[in-house]
Image: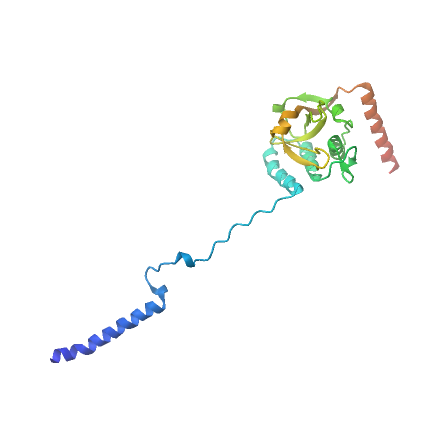
Length: 227
């Protein structure tokens, strides 16, 4: 009997401690050894926002940044500068028979403007005439700065652009569009590819076409003297 009396306070004390511990875990479940997370109560994962579409100007600029590293070892300084200048007029609207970016540029005037502005190289006004300047090269031989020609009006060499590398070229396509970069391998342009030329100072121009070009050179010289 005395043994029971001696154990009773101890049992009561242990029972009270167990109740307190149970209460503590109930009130603070984070104290549990392996807490279970209710997946339904997790914060919802935010869906990735759609990347805003880039303007043609931005696309062209970013493409040049990507392509320039790959092409750095294969282009000359002049070709690199030429392409850079061409990229700077991406977004300029197409306008027939215009010669300055401020008013617009058609296919051949875009090419002529870039070569004259960056290299001081004067090209004939028409794409058919440009196709007789420099030496013909194959598609496999293309390097940045070469001219690429297309039959877009059921007429050979009726359109021209500047090859920029990575099977891409820059040009001013047609009415309602603007200067942009396109892929030579696309169905439309691949089907209409008409050849390429590398400007090396030679030409196959006729006497009248050569005289026309010389007249333009003299006109530019007179303008520069009057400035």
